[in-house]
Amino acid sequence: MGVRNLEKGQKALDEVNARKPQGTLSLLALDVSNDDSIHAAAKKLEADYGRLDVLINNAGNQVQPRFPTREQLRESFETNVYGPVIVTQTLLPLITASHGKKIINVSSELGSITGGSNPSHHAYRNPFTAYRMSKAALNMLSATTYAHLKDQGVKVWSFCPGFVVTNLADQRDRRAAMGAESSETSAQAILDIVEGKRDAEAGTFIGRYGRQIPW
Ligand SMILES: NC(=O)c1ccc[n+]([C@@H]2O[C@H](COP(=O)([O-])OP(=O)(O)OC[C@H]3O[C@@H](n4cnc5c(N)ncnc54)[C@H](OP(=O)(O)O)[C@@H]3O)[C@@H](O)[C@H]2O)c1
Image (cartoon, rainbow, N blue to C red; front, top):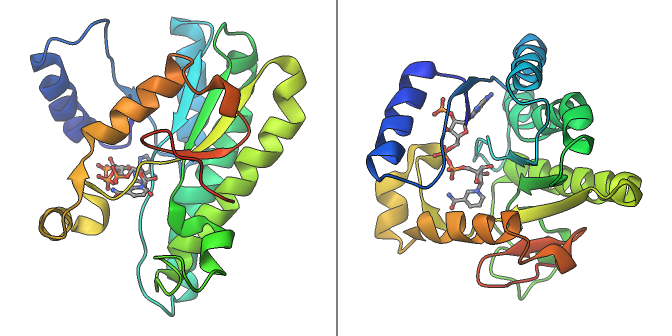
């Protein structure tokens, strides 16, 4: 579990372990907006495990203004795009050395260009310009990574977790009030990918409940 804040990470780890999960879970210091941190994390993974079966690029932020400043655009792309690009590149030797060879990029349907250009799509006029652009760029990372690496057995997905209750944009209460579902539904869908249930959909954009999402 890569975390940029070890104190918050330890709290999350304790909460998960209190539920007595199968297997083991440990923390890895990782700030995806910092190359030194990414390289240090890769070194530690290599030393501790020598391979990485599944990489889940989950870290993200949601910059919401309709007219973002240059600074807000940078903030958005640093975490949602540049982070996954550099993390994936850096960890590639560990991924290709693994049995699983899976990369899951946690995206958003708000990044679907098909949805953003279809007047009847529910998110057609969603105003989160920087967030939507960043997730569209992340989707291109998924498509191109798969195109380049599928012959080496690497599987890549863009995955939308759906509208769920989390701390995204500090709107936990608002999300719950708006009817967002539990994030456990997203976690279950990610587990399905990890366990191979969505292998046939590698190289595509998918969601919970078996959904296919148009790019
Ligand atoms: N919730 C939804 O409805 C929804 C819908 C579509 C897509 N998504 C996507 O789902 C993913 C997870 O978001 P979430 O909803 O679970 O929101 P969240 O509760 O805000 O979680 C985002 C996590 O990313 C971490 N993070 C942010 N910047 C980072 C960095 N530079 N390095 C390392 N970690 C960093 C945060 O760490 P800290 O705890 O240290 O802040 C936080 O734990 C995101 O990619 C988001 O875009 C969510």
